[in-house]
Image (cartoon, rainbow, N blue to C red; front, side):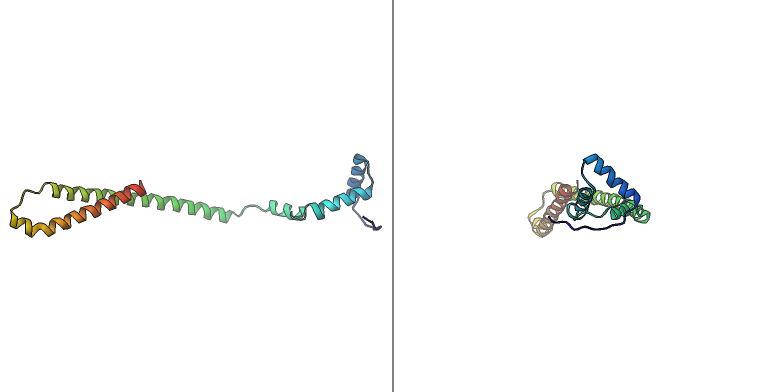
Length: 145
């Protein structure tokens, strides 16, 4: 690729670094500067410049955000504990109710035909309720324990 002469003013430290590279690689100033500029402009085109990276890493973390995050984590833990307690209470209440209904259905004494007819609707309702409670109980057992 054809080159064009350019005159630049460089800080002494940078010129010394270029000269050290010339000695260590056995090349000349032009080659060292071209390689350095190619690395900056072509090889690292997608990466941030060194000044941007330095500024970004030098920024301290936002303590306000960290504090808010900690507060939220504590609140989430408390809410989770309350939900677990509520699920436990609901499950024990449903278990108690189902047990009472099952007891009532199994301990009923034989009825006369007229009592059976008048109480048939009540028995059917009790059986339906018992099934509903069993379904609810099984739901909570399978999804929350």
